[in-house]
Length: 191
Image (cartoon, rainbow, N blue to C red):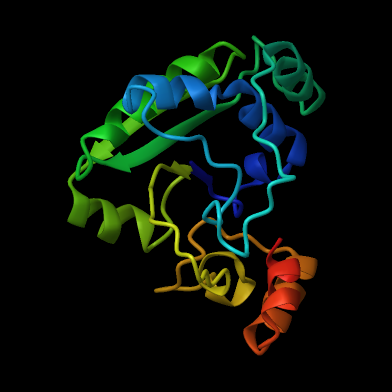
């Protein structure tokens, strides 16, 4: 679930933390994959040199999520509202969006869903960055290239930094990793 970080409502880290704490990832796995999947703790494939086993999956905490939303200025009278856009190209994604909608409602967030045909979704929503949040999936590679999804220079028309992520420290680390040949140092940077 990618939040469009170009929008003011998602630029507040407390809002993003609240949304993360509202989501029960294991419940998604249990329902959508009948417990035959593993919750991912980051953008790198478990078992790869880039994977950091010390990064833990956030645990659902409804009370803390509500407190963070309140701190950010959202409550029952002024709820956080946004749309999740996704495609029906995967039979699982619309169901995942419905589960997320249900889970986020527990902290008072109002979520609308928009499910589209794949090509229309890409051309009208994803590539022109015309979304509040987008539900997508991708395969994880044993030799990742975080530049494509996470570097600020990929936040452009035709780029794959779809959510507008821009962190100067991460940009620096990604740039450093691009020319690194020492696999051990590279693994440390990725982690």
